[in-house]
Length: 362
Image (cartoon, helix red, strand yellow):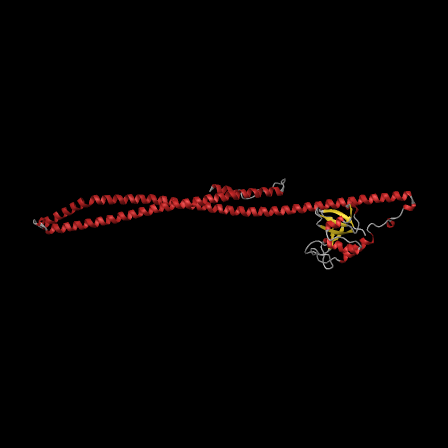
């Protein structure tokens, strides 16, 4: 029973230390509980066989008790038979003594003789047999008492092993429940950590993009100022510069905006539904550019630009395998056909898997 108690005491997970990694702590708890469950399974197997052995021993003692009881009953029957035989012999001897030649001296003398004959007959014929039967009866009685004590002890052993077996089973159930709880806690912690890491990565990407855009804007302002200082002929305002996106980008964005609210459908390229590359292909067709219906092929077929140089109308790509793309509309926003069950929508480009950008041109 002590082994089960020790295992039961170890089932309650230890409190998490303030400076410990919660995920590592939960993993350690899960490993410890799994080890306890293995020990409890082994313990249950051992107790089950001990229970079988104790029951077998108790059954054997019971058979011996039954045999002793049968012997005691048989000895009693034999003693009763011997008493009956002795009575019959005595009565028969009395009758023969009363009617036979030994009664010629008178009734009184005959009675005395008969009594003496009866006593002699009883002593001679039965005392030895009766003594033997009494001794056998005593022996069986003592044996039965000893066996009954052994039987009680064996039954107590069976009961104790059965209690230990049930305690081990209860401990196993408690350990299994504790393990499931720890696994649930661990899954929640992992999901929380992944969400935090994704948010942190997105924040880093956003900050880097903003930084790069600020650098690009600073360089553009410096270049414009230098050009203005060299010649008034080349001091054109920003509105006089050749547009990078041009009318095509504006048309593509306007066409994409008209598709907002239509459902995502894998492999679709309009007009009623779209997948991600189908939407950008449809939009830029309105801008005068023909694009293939495949994200990586669209990237390869267009001019690659750095993320710090994004302009409205550019294509933005996600994932190292280029599994998703959207149409950049400015202000950190894009129009995308996201996934099954969602509609064409505006969405932030600041995701941890933002990987590249390109610019279609007529």
